[in-house]
Image (cartoon, rainbow, N blue to C red; front, side, top):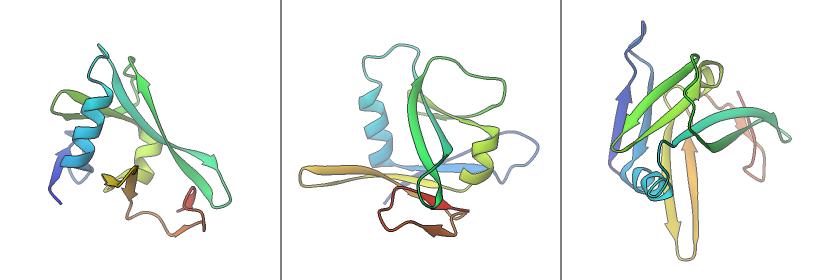
Length: 120
């Protein structure tokens, strides 16, 4: 698994988000024909364990966003969500006809049985 690590240039330089080559390829293909689009990642209150990840397209870059540039796209994470996502590796796994994004988050203390939510 090859990782592309991007470090933001803010006051603390230990902040980072890692994407595997597979995840970069997946996001690049999602944005292939979408001009001025970025991928927004965050967490929300949800599920039986407390939090769930969300992903969406976003044209706007908010003042409280942490930005990561990968090849031809940006990942945007609001600062509150980034507190819980700092150090996370995102992988895209394809097995047969099934595929999914996997978040390897060192901040997670427990996950629910179905894998849809987590606690910190």
